[in-house]
Length: 143
Image (cartoon, rainbow, N blue to C red; front, side):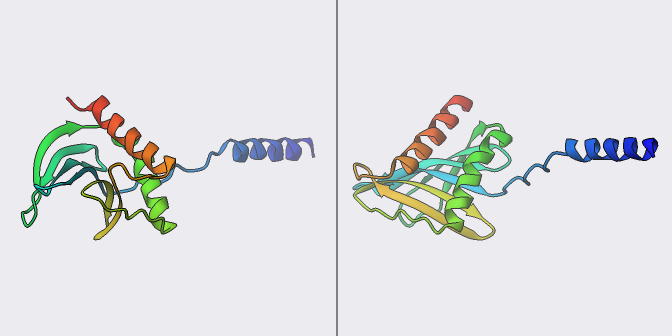
């Protein structure tokens, strides 16, 4: 009986030590930047979930232009991807417009989820904080 109780105790310890499995990484891209004005030029960064970063620009009616900019730690990028995925699931929307706009776009699985607001427009502190944190993250890791 004592042996049985000891085995039950050990099994409980083993099961108690199990941790929840890590979440699978989110695949996709984040496009972040601003643009508009009289030239219509939009520019920023395109960040792949594997950490590769490109400087991005696009003129009206022209294809996107990409130039390698460096890389960021892919695991450190995951919180940004997870937040965008959550906002997309919740159908959270920011669709301001102005002469010049700021934007964050989540591209994945042939879908695009975009938040945009006019520069100078009031935007929630949550969105503004996300945008600033993402830009600071890129500045810290890119040459």
